[in-house]
Length: 223
Image (cartoon, rainbow, N blue to C red; front, side, top):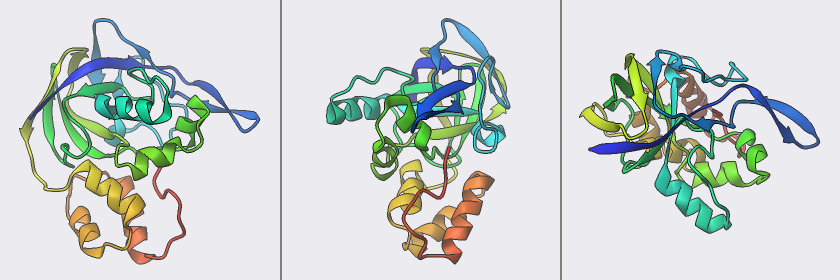
């Protein structure tokens, strides 16, 4: 199973407008020409504005499926270019339902592993002035996913994202579904928690969810 990097983006920490004020964010990212280094903490030149919810080894690389950008563009009558949702890699040929937690891929000169879905937060809405956008992403099971880096290397647009090992039957879309839409699905929740490669922060949120099945509506995990 292989995808392709349509575009690679990095960005600096800045601010975006939100409800009459400006909030820190690095969601605005720009395409990179050529190849750049990928380390355990992410791409060279890429920054995070809020380290409490962004960055770290389990969130070294953010990916988003190009097919979902195009579909959302049609739904909202808006053009979303690669990088529109703050992702580092815009991917062709793979989407959330086909990517599993713990999947290991070669990516250019690097080796990476899927760690968790992306949890769309209000900064996606702030980026585009569309308050419903985070819910459209999460509840539409098209939020994207994060990678951890197993072996560092250089990466560029056009590189293949080639599956070399699959260790679980749990897709990114399934984790997103149980987290945001079907929280009372106990068996599915247990299946997700049984995957050791799931990122610790997401696991902790699901453990809370398991203990409090009647949580009010809202997003327990943000990116």
